[in-house]
View 1: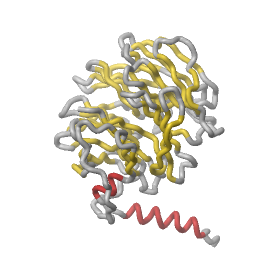
View 2: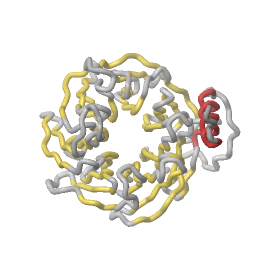
View 3: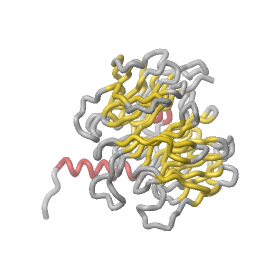
View 4: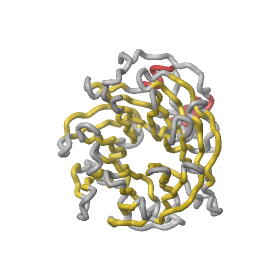
Length: 368
């Protein structure tokens, strides 16, 4: 029998140990050295996905006022590992909800001191959480064929919205990001799909859909309540199809596409973000692009990536809602610890911050 190389044995051992750990098993804690945040504190939570099956996801916090970054804040505060592949974080009230995709759970922490407040389990492959009210939130899911309804007050699942289209495993409306206009939530269907679903939040039912480019993932609403969607176009060899990446602008009243920008075949449009006044769109496509929302011209590059490959480096994007400063998550080689590069609103580099493995998602802590 062929012998395994030593580094492969270490990888396997690491996976086995992380898989056997329980949520409540305590690790040795390091002092965080950050006081309880006040309502006037400005900062940004940073999700570091970690590597699939390595249980090394983490949460960072950048204190904007004090220009300091704190890494592993969940572990260091609570003595618990965050889990396997963190995807997103959202704040509702005084609580922050961290969605852990491959662990199938959502951790809940206090947004001011990062202390553990509970968890929601029983999820298949959760991606994003969207709050409808104090008693109801939706959780999108990659494989569940449904959007999960939870009660944040009881931290429990209360129901499901069926989005099963009757197709095979990979063609089954895998829901991703969500935004809301009035009583309707729009949900993108990313993997092996080309739909934006329309959900009635009063009845918790799927009532319509919009066809866009292949694999719509990221979405934002502008100041005119137009919905912007980035579609990555799939990948070569995909059984669902492979086409040019696209950026789509949708009228949320008529559910019609108002304008569409087509990019190159191997481009990857994603990580849409918008400034505080919601008049300028930003997105990743190897480089960082920007687009005034009322312009019909082509998006322009504001920050050039130092990487040449399609799927290298730049992996997340956030816009400070107060200053319009640009935060770019640089995952480097997707194995070592990443970094955050902070730019001025005109694209001039200002600062570099070290963070965890595969930084990808920003959530600015809004002032109360």
